[in-house]
Length: 366
Image (cartoon, rainbow, N blue to C red; front, side, top):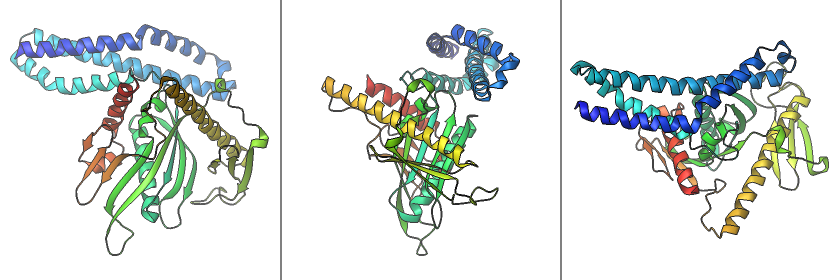
């Protein structure tokens, strides 16, 4: 038994060593040290936006380093326990190994995020699809699922726009997940999500199938140079809808921007002023256009390579099925990962799906 445990520990240690090499811990520590020096400069807070970027990046770098160091410490502890050849300690190590293996596998997924925009924050847009009120309710359930996922991981979120449906739920919503690698992590969630359940809005309690679309794009940065000429957009202002208070829906502050060449429409109504909403809406539009440009480049590369099976996340294919009746099951259409605890999934426990999607995308991009 001790020999088997030693082999498992050696394998896990080797995997963690390769992860440490890919992540380049010495480089991460140098970056953190440089940021800490920036943070110590009293002048930093004269530029609030830059200060927030510095402190946020510091926090995430520190978390990454501590995560790797904690895993290495756990491996050293179980290895030391086995070396003492105490049956009780070996039993404890045996119990610890499965969770340790799972945590290392989760960290290993991070090393697969090497795409051009994977390191970016994520802009998430959810739209209700076919299914009437049930679909609007389903869209709101999905929004809560992703916001709870972000909360579980300590990621800050910022809601730009929520368009409420008449009876229940939402027509659409747009929010940002403020975390490094949020885009690369969530990119596999892009697509159509299908829900089957007994409709809470049907007085005959019939089964209803509803659809909602999830759109994931990377947040733009200053280096992206997404120029949008004024003559290519139409800007409309209107009164905010939905839950009010604090003057939000008492003035014509909501902004809708239509990009005429592509037909892309974005809205923002969650800020206090029309100027703030317009600035936020332009950020969302820039992110959408950046993704269009990226997809066009990917399509052209596929054409040049003669590929007929380019992996694309802009299709209307259903990527995941959520079944609440007549049985409980959530199943991913691409990876075939299946979970029976639907309540946990809808409460944000979606890492199993996310990690499988990342591995699937990496495998199909090689």
